[in-house]
Image (cartoon, rainbow, N blue to C red; front, side, top):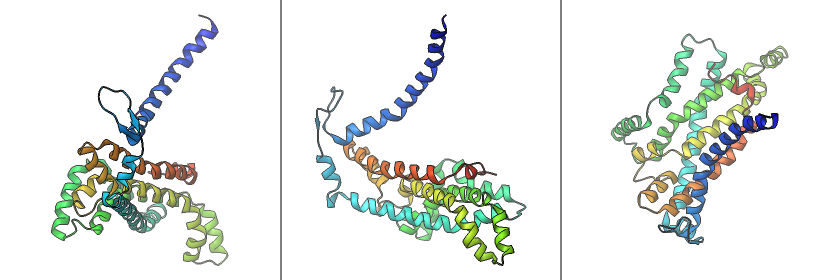
Length: 272
């Protein structure tokens, strides 16, 4: 076998793996785009026979409920970010800077919501919220969204505060700055990129959350994932695909922001 053939054989496997990954990622997205703009697509046609924007007009009609679901999704996600970060910032600072005897156990507690299947957890939460009168309320939905959101918020906030350069804090204290001013002017600005990344993760998790909203919020509260589920169960694949594309926009945009804000030194400290 010649050197050229050997090089070709060595490069074949990575090329095949990249091709398979591209198909797995872009194949469903391509099908999603086809359904979003398909006017007519009947068996046995492999591709839509007619494209258009008629279903886009149907989705955004006032009576369709898409605008209401969109505003509800964004409002709930922002409220979830506010509540999660309000709890995560002091918790992350304490876990990163204070000597806590049960630190590993506390970190494990925040991770537990992601360690179990979400369906039985949300079913039990819905039963508890029903007794408290929180079913069908925005408060109940925000609380149930904050449960998985705290996992991202606390773990990333802890890593962000752990990555702060303590020598700058010590220099500020030596120059006469008090604890609060040192935190405001030195600690918080350095941890800010990590906190922004944590907020984005919580926002994206909340805006895509379906199970918790379904058991706690419906039928009084409708979000975009609920609208997408109802459309797909009714066979309205065009409307479901359009809703999925709307949900895809903030996910892609914010992921680009996360790549900029979440630095390697913060990532290396997650879980420590």
